[in-house]
Amino acid sequence: MTATATSVGEPDRTHPQDTPPSRAAAWLLRLLPAVAAALSGVLLYISFPPRTLWWLALPAFAGFGWALRGRGWKAGLGLGYLFGLGFLLPLLVWTGVEVGPGPWLALAAIEAVFVALVGAGAAAVSKLPGWPLWAAALWIAGEAARARVPFEGFPWGKIAFGQADGVFLPLAAVGGTPVLGFAVVLCGFGLHEAVRLAVRARRTGEVRRGAAAVALLSVAVPLVGAVAARPLVSDEAEDGTATIAVIQGNVPRAGLDFNAQRRAVLDHHARETRRLAAEVAAGEVDRPDFVLWPENSSDIDPFANPDARAVIDRAARAIGVPISVGGVVERDGKLLNEQILWDPDKGPVDTYDKRQIQPFGEYLPLRSLIGAINDEWTSMVSQDFSRGSEPGVFTMAGTEVGLVTCYEAAFDWAVRSEVTDGAQLISVPSNNATFGRSEMTYQQLAMSRVRAVEHSRTVAVPVTSGVSAIIMPDGTVTQKTGMFVADSLVQEVPLRSSQTPATRLGVAPEIVLVLVAAGGLGWAVGAGVRGRRAGGV
Image (cartoon, rainbow, N blue to C red; front, side, top):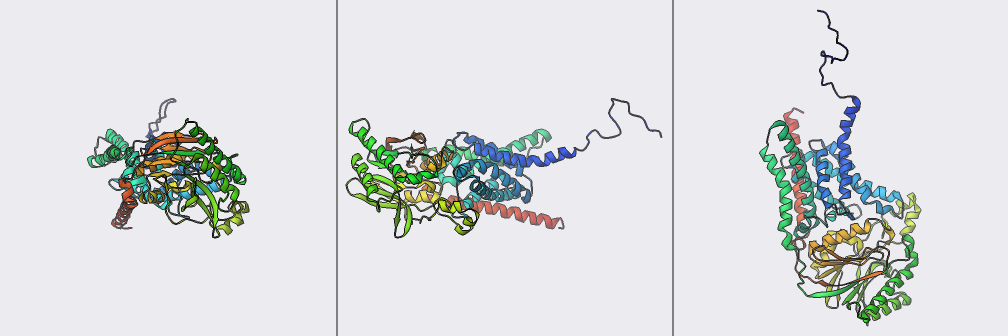
């Protein structure tokens, strides 16, 4: 036989037209899941405040599900870490505003490990029937772990905290942040599964009815549940109303050095309170029943310093109603971040000591190790704060006001304990001055909006430098200040004493979801073992 030459311009018929992809193309295909995981994490970040793009969380988890589905746990570990970095690096950038990128990068890197472990587990369960359910439960298990360890946890970035403007928000009243977050993640993974099955059916004509039903239910049930939960969200004044005043005195300038000007910060809040008192006396503003100052509004201990006590006394007498003052006090050798109930006639009559204090901000774990790395960091926290042990509910002009100081608002138990202790209204006194004009204050405000719905309580947020706000029990912000301005907010708000299912159930929904996650993971591990045995491995 003789070979036939191929004419110029004609395809070579002696080789198949579907040639293997080039090495570069193969590498791109291998990198695609990693890129998708990282970009999905960024998309999840974009869904968080101050933006109101809550719905982007759904395609974010759909993309994450696409990257994970059908892969081994080792691949899931790496993809989960990339997803976690894509989400947490931009979300937590505010932690490095005044201390540099080191702590920010370290925090994001450590917290992303939890997401990596979720990714490994989600990849393992992705081969199971109904995998969106198991994977969503695993996400909540990861959040539960992250909220508890290390150093008593860091719940910042819970999926629920990005949903203050979303349709799923009523679910917070059903089972708190775990149920709200679970619904969002389940819907996102279900969205991916529904699209995948639809594409497969169009390409092959094969319709897997059972899998399709699970996918559609994963999307529909959270949405229907959110609509069904709407009656739990109410602004009705069950116990009458109270007129409250939120004071934002502002700080001399942003940054860590504002603590060196502690007297000026106190003077600013006293001055704003006296200004409000003048407006009340002139009939321009309704007289409040009580006044709420922010955390650190008096960093000078008023119990030990007569001049600070005199400043607060004058402000309280001018407005003529009780004030909740945020102070830094030293008692029995302990440094305490304290809320002080200040009566205009009697002076200080009650206190609440912050229970969930901030690692690396209010106390320094591993002090000797960190000092060996950078002694400037140890000088920033020269003395550790001590923790309080009891819930803080002040009786202010007949109203039971629960105190949740700043960082505590991120922790489910810290907010719930005040409500179960009788709070009809919640105050979240905060100090965000050290984080400048970053997104931190908006992220924290969103937490308070979720807490308002979770426990069906009005939430007041007095902040030293902004954004201060008043939030209705349905999560609506009715008034808020700007940043780094002196201002006050006065409003009549509803008081409530009934408890939502979330308040009554407490940690139970989270425990159930963790058990669901464990069940799915156990099923996946068992299936893998049986598969290897059947294959003779």
